Image (cartoon, rainbow, N blue to C red; front, side, top):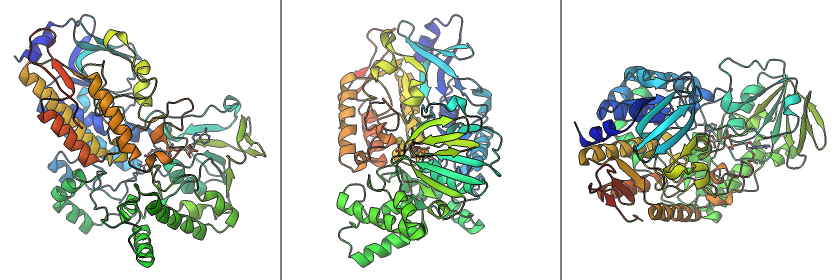
Amino acid sequence: MSSTQASIDRTSTAGSEHLDAIVIGAGFAGLYQLHSLRDRLGLKVRVLEAGSGVGGTWYWNRYPGARCDSESYYYSFSFSDELQQEWGWSERYPEHGEIRRYLNFVADKFDLRRDIQFDTRVRSASFDEAANLWHVVTEGGTRLSAQFLITAVGCLSSANIPKIAGLESFRGQWYHTGRWPQEDVDFTGKRVGLIGTGSTGIQATPVIAAKAAHLTVFQRTANYSIPARNGPVSPEEQREIKANYAAIREQARNSPNGHPFDISPVSALEAPPDERLARYEAAWERGGLRFRAAFKDLLTNKAANDTASDFIRAKIRGIVKDPAVAEMLTPKDHPFATKRPPIDSEYFETFNRDNVTLVDIKASPIVEITPDGIRTKDAEIPLDIIVFATGFDAMTGPLLAVDIRGRDGIALRDSWSAGPRTYLGLQVAGFPNLFTITGPGSPSVLTNMPVAIEQHVDWISRCIRHMRDQGLTRIEADAAAAEAWVAHVNDAANATLLPLANSSWYLGANVPGKPRVFMPYAGGMANYAMICEKVAAKGYEGFILSDPAVPEARGGRGAMVG
Ligand code: N01
């Protein structure tokens, strides 16, 4: 029996089931964390999942047009070659249903379901310092305890439903895209209002417009969007991808954003105007997020970015026939890609349809929702269905939705009242043995998520293995290391143009009252992974490791790695 096991057995677990680790969430992160801890380290693990099936964000986001903005062949797990050889993707950008089928396939292949408790929302989690374990209580009243608590709650899972007066009086149906019903919503012959023009609204608009009698899009901020150019993956492409997976994954891991393609070494300002235009045209034709890689400095140099922003503005004006509508759809208040760039299928073209109207709610704000529709400053628009594509309380929302209490009962909500403070996005000072997969302060949403998730899960699993090998039972971020990391996260954001987008959810700006702090780490995925490796290699520098049951236990308190 390892010393870790011995210390687990010493703890009081009366009245609740005891585990080595509790994982919250059964999306990409929770599934891989379960496999990693249970099947590789032999830990007793339970995953608690609010949904009735696996999928995480893909379980809930079933809205019309929901599909991934990263390409299927790399928006997937790399940890098992057998898995990536067995699974075949049908489309360049997988639709939500195909991603769920994939994650169900993963759950079956690795026999994960037996350790996942579905329909179980976690209400609270509190750290018991004397017993050195976490007590978890679910909405249903189930009590569990574990040495480690690992959140795999996703970054974009807490729906942001704006508080608009009168919603409760609306006689039609209303939905938030991130809480879409399991059954299809029939838009046929209906007057539909859609609020929000982020990635979600931009994906949903053309699909709803094709069915509805009339679609009114309520736009607060005009957005850039790049055509996806979705299509089937041919058998030849499948074969080529599968034959080259090792190199593809390696390239993704070594890139700044987790995507397996190179960023051009050329500055947009150095390229002669005709060459620059030709590159943008080629990137536009190819479609997708790779557009950002057309030049090396689109996210670091405003003048370089202006060339891309102007190119897209010209495209919008070229596509949309009504000049007044085109003007409304042309983004002016932020540089391209400082908000997560949506990719679309015929979004701007949809505004050429007779059954689609655009309402600028900055010019004419929504006043209230009435029993029959939406009333703006200037008009009442009768509606049968309202779709809120209004995004998420990103990154911190899903964590703060659980009442998490650390040492001395301190609430995470209080600890983060001025914005999230983590060390490496992995741990929070004062919350021992709590790991936050893709937490604020990690690259997460600025990268291809499966790459970010696998890196975190691997790091956490290695850390736990190290603790078991060394007879250590507690790990906690050092407060000074966390402060230094928060400063570094700020510096990394300020070295880019990203903070220039005032209405970005990266900044928490979309949720009224939320502290404005740039949450993800913008220093690059590969660079971040290297920092994490360095931290581990230096004996988990910046973390305090101990075994509280053994006062003289070997542990470490490290300095911050820059
Ligand atoms: O959310 P958003 P999203 N009144 O916050 C508007 C990922 N994703 O769900 O910009 C009126 O981006 C808001 O206006 P403004 C992806 O990372 C991925 O679209 O704040 N309007 C904005 O237009 C993405 O970035 C895929 O002024 C209000 C919109 O609602 C992230 O999820 C697909 C409002 C919200 O845009 C979030 O995207 C979809 C209010 N009170 C999403 N509040 C993939 O393809 C907000 N808005 C993988």
